[in-house]
Length: 157
Image: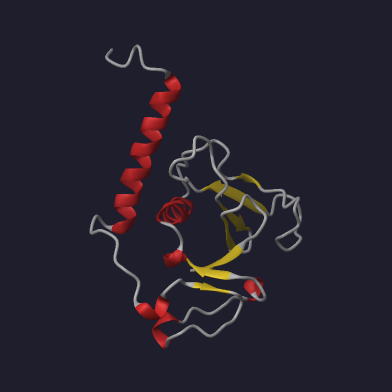
């Protein structure tokens, strides 16, 4: 076998990277990434419900009131890949994906243990899982963190 002398960890990294590339190509429709319209510049809100234009309106659900928000289409490409995987029910690239998120930092609303689950958002250049995650709630909530649970944004879909 030609991969006999290649370390298993390197093979796993290469296979994982290929998987993410294929998934990203599928999510973007192989048509490249389109620039956001100027009215949707950053896609992030500090909790206000009034987007810049009627076409950019996304209603803020009750569970997200008072939180910083981000539209799903304004998330990093890797986070959008994870959302698509969650919608499909997997498979996920990391064994920890889908495990219970304990909310020990108490940044998210308090719920019973097992209510929240976390998923890794790949960070290019990181040698480990990195700091970015999507956390889901049993009530259909989606949250994004890029600082390893210090802060969260409610993901508006």
